[in-house]
Image (cartoon, rainbow, N blue to C red; front, side, top):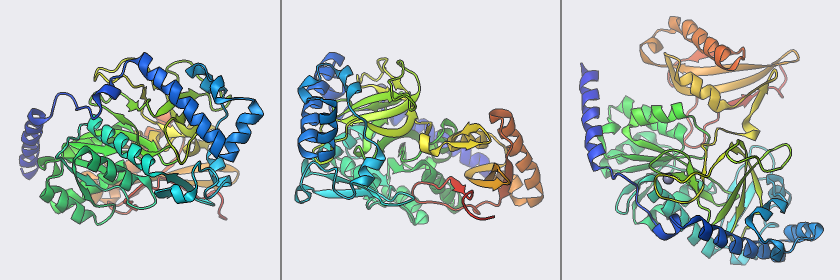
Length: 458
Ligand SMILES: [Zn+2]
């Protein structure tokens, strides 16, 4: 009965929100967001030449690479000529740690950010004061595109610190004219209370942390679907459509995907509009390409491959053809929202994250999508890789949920369902271990999805 009452309340709340929600998300910079394609291309070409000059004149690595290829910025006559330029890879940043890729003296930088990296040196990125302003503008544009409005309360649960997520969202939301709650990650009970008490309309965090918030709210008896929350901006890790549906259902909001990476900017590179059919990449500041990761050649229009991004306006850290390792495709058809900027398909995985197990290629997000469809499981999981003899072996650890979660004797049957689902959909034989609710680790930031034990002695 309590469940029924709650679900009716949720329905009422949803209907109430549907009346309040605008039909189309507002523009932050209407002129630029709807610029005709020919004008956009002319702007990109002009900015590309300037970006190449900045890179050639101020970054020794780029000066050398362009000289070796005999390319002058003025040689770039058409946008397609970008394909002749050299790639930049993550190792370039590591090799020139900490400041060797910067096009400005350290004293002219307003801020440094970095990624921890699982092994070796971190990746360091830098911004001039003007870069910070560009970033705030692009993030404000992204928030507006996702449906956030000036005057909204934005609950920002992305981590503040060296990671670009927290401060990137923060400056953008302020620029848009929203009221930011700078929560960072952790203290989830308090987050739930403040979302409710402060009347947050937008929630920003990783999708995996959104589920942690949902879980804690349910435990605390707080019905977030009856709160003022309407929009979530989730990113910084790949997530499946099934995960999106789960978050939307449990928190009662529209879950929007946003994309960015610190080497290029941080969040604010691309974002979904109300159509939720691909993420608009802001082409007045970036050139997006998709290449075959093996040959380095552009793939035919619309085909999947590795996303490559060139920055057009970054002063401190220009990036020419940066290989993101992210797998996606470009959608060049005009979007119904009116924006003219290209869309990138939702990132299904990162080349680096792809697991190859006994000849089968699999992304963690594929397994995530399957798990959400298995009755009796919660969307908290970890993939454990082991070596058995000479063969790689995958163990899927997932938590039990629902009525079966209180009966450990049912776990064997749930594990069997998981095994069967993965075998029949991906063709991979795995072991499944069902854990009690709350047994797997929760992360306030990016979730750790894979534990690779293959290197350790067994
Ligand atoms: Zn659109």
